Length: 201
Image 1 (cartoon, rainbow, N blue to C red):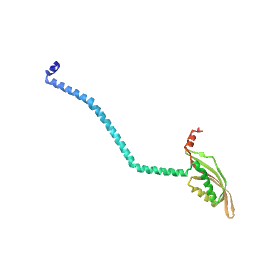
Image 2 (cartoon, one colour):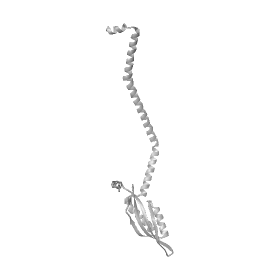
Image 3 (cartoon, rainbow, N blue to C red):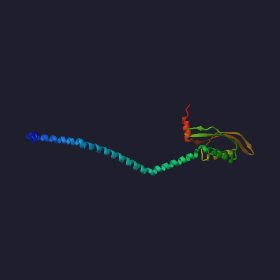
Image 4 (cartoon, helix red, strand yellow):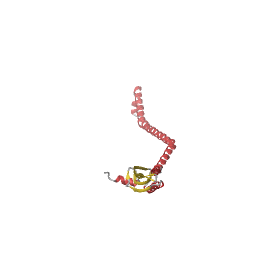
């Protein structure tokens, strides 16, 4: 037998128990440090990941439950955009819009003395398209013309209205009217980019 083992066996029982307890404690510390702690750390990470996944599932479930509402909002926004596009034409539609303004005036019985488009005034995402107009006709015809312009599907503002040369012709009050008609159009992406590249004064 190994002399060291014989030496231990000859020790008093109290010392043998103390050695046994020390050995067991060392084994317990080794097991806790190298086996339990890594597993505990892994378990903590898995629980944190589980909480995160539960939160993602809950969020996606909430989105899925709100999908019909979001779809409706998306459709409503598209309808509003279509309406805005109708009210603000692009550059290709401006000539036809100006033609419809003159057609409304002639339909109301007015004579166009001046119809002079002015330079556009660019804003953030749209441009103002002003037109100097001078018309001649009766008060009634002028009122009908302004009403017809107001009912156009496009936005057209009439400003700077000035009545001149008011006279009675065959029991009809005739007048010459100077005004500024302003419509608007969306700027294309290229126009907006070009505008942002220009140095500000």
